[in-house]
Length: 150
Image (cartoon, rainbow, N blue to C red; front, side, top):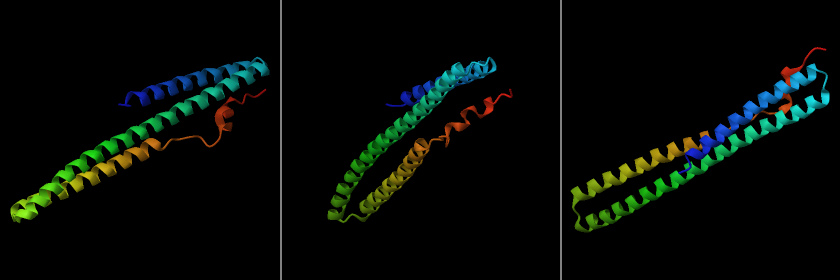
């Protein structure tokens, strides 16, 4: 459903990172030529590209999280419907007092609960991984390597 959106967002992030590198090299060249105003403009462009790349990554993580939540909801609904059927069958088996039938239904019921636990933990792990992003603490490190001795 949403699977191609995060890929596109990550691709856009990579493009912004490439543009950032281009702008950084322009900053370096402008500084070497003594063009401080041009260097400042290119530095602003590089910072803007860096922020845009981070924004694309954040949006990708958010879309992944939403997709995971939707998948969890769908899975939970399926299991709930299945369990409702088992409960009805258990009610009928209890009325007939057929111990074999009751035992089989209880096994099925427990199995579905185990499946729900596994699916829930899988989805929780997937969601925690998609919502975690590595964001630099400050942007002052962006141009620390551009110091050129005069």
